[in-house]
Image (cartoon, rainbow, N blue to C red; front, top):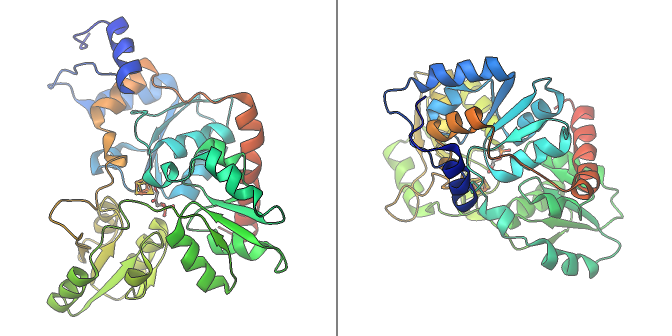
Length: 337
Ligand code: 13P
Ligand code: SF4
């Protein structure tokens, strides 16, 4: 037994801290232990591209928000271990409520989801009773209960285009993705004023300097970035679309304006190419998402060992909230995504 504190104490600290604060023997081979637990418990690890590289390397599936939701829906594993953030694990639970869904750190939240509190959104929505509500999947389970169709950055344009032209649309919570979609789809939408703290940190001036230093490089960007960054980008897409683009392109150098975790997969797929994280507008490593990076190999191991912390949702939230996700899944399947 490696744990140095009793489980009762660990569970208490779980309540206080959102994860199992149990000391893990530093000599333990975590990769071996996690792989053992996966087999023993018939568990699957789903990891987002923004996770630290060690977690990506041990995952059964690595993907963007849409890919992760699709995997969560179809898995026959008994336990889904979600190496990502809270809204992603909630989505997995809503799509597959009979499964146990674990998140290594319950405090792995999302600034974008937090920027749209459901009680305020409910009031906002009342002002536009005839509008269709499209919400980016980066929102709370409760916000999904107030939503007609969900979307991710991979399928957002298909979702917007599925709404009849004579219908107004409220788009929440990301004002940057919303503004980008308005332009792409050529229609006005009512935008909720939320944003992602990571994608709003990039400095246009420093990106220009990086492109001067690397004249053959292309800027690629996630649509959660601000309009003035997107205006400079050679290619805009979700994390999986950015990854595919860098692999298939003839170009050898890229300045990458999204969370830096994706660069691990870009380097694995295209080892001879150069990937430069887009510089933030200060000196810290702010293009690391502090929420995504709360998950560690130690927390992943403990959460699989003790099957905690678990995502628990009220039945009404699952029943009401899953409808907008299912609608999104249908639109994606129709579009071949
Ligand atoms: P995608 O991986 O779906 O592009 O989403 C990016 C993101 O910010 C997830 O939190
Ligand atoms: Fe949320 Fe932004 Fe972190 Fe994604 S990168 S989880 S949108 S805060």
